[in-house]
Image (tube, rainbow, N blue to C red; front, side):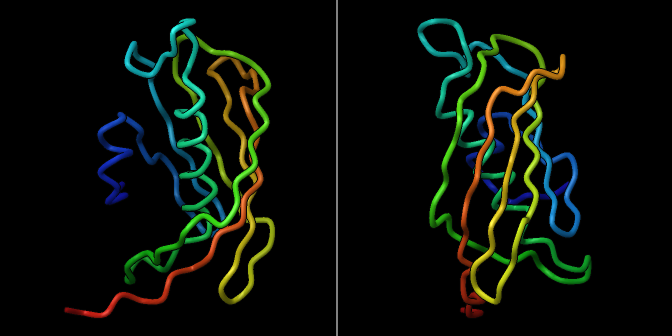
Length: 131
C-alpha cells in the first residue's frame, strides 16, 4: 500500500489498511525504536498514533490522490510499556466537517495490550497547485 511518507518509511512503519474513515499502521519493534529503559520511545508512540488518526480522514476513491492534512491537536494517553513484538496503531474518524475532522486512535501490542490512546483534530490542506 502506497503511503508516500518518507519519515514513516524510514522508521519501518507500514500502512496495512486504509479505508474510508479508518487507517492502520504496524511496526515491528527494533532496537532503534527503544528508549534508555528498553521500552518503546514515546515519540514513536506519538508518531504512530498521529499517522493513524491523520490518515483516517484522508481516504479518497481509488481513482483519486489522497488529500493532505495537518495536525491541529493530538492528545495521547500512555497506558502501558512494550519492549518487543509487532504493534498496531488504528485511527478512526469520529466527526468530519468540510475542513476539520476529528479522530481517535489506539496503539495495541500483539498480545492485545493497549499501549496508548489518542484523540486528535486535523485540518485538511487546500489542494496543491500543479507547478
